[in-house]
Image 1 (cartoon, rainbow, N blue to C red):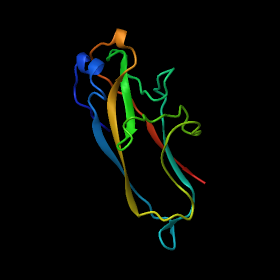
Image 2 (image 1 turned 135 degrees about the vertical axis):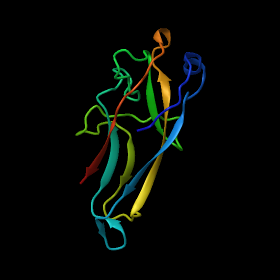
Image 3 (image 1 turned 90 degrees about the horizontal axis):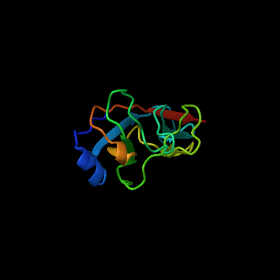
Image 4 (image 1 turned 60 degrees about the vertical axis):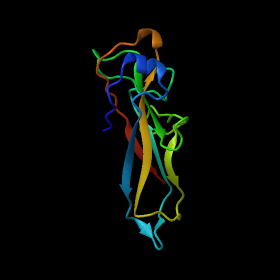
Length: 144
């Protein structure tokens, strides 16, 4: 869970990446070949059923009586200008951004992290309202 700070509608309209919050996904891997090499190709992407209909980089609010016109975007910490593109399916990556990938037989540390960030994103500036905002996404691991 990532909690963003409370921000004003003015901040949502006027600040680049309002409420920006850094977070880290931590992993450990143990199914190694000799030399800490992976046994399979590994790809990770994010999927959600809560995506904006015209912009698959925006997670929309799931609370009926919550804030309107605003959602969330996620980014890699070192690529803040490129929002993560989500898949609408947990079984098909499609055009969704790979947040991690490694080829079979490649060396991988037994523990590793992916540094990310989340922020509010106004997708309808004319219909912004205050209120609680919640959305969800699933981290999908694909092995082959």
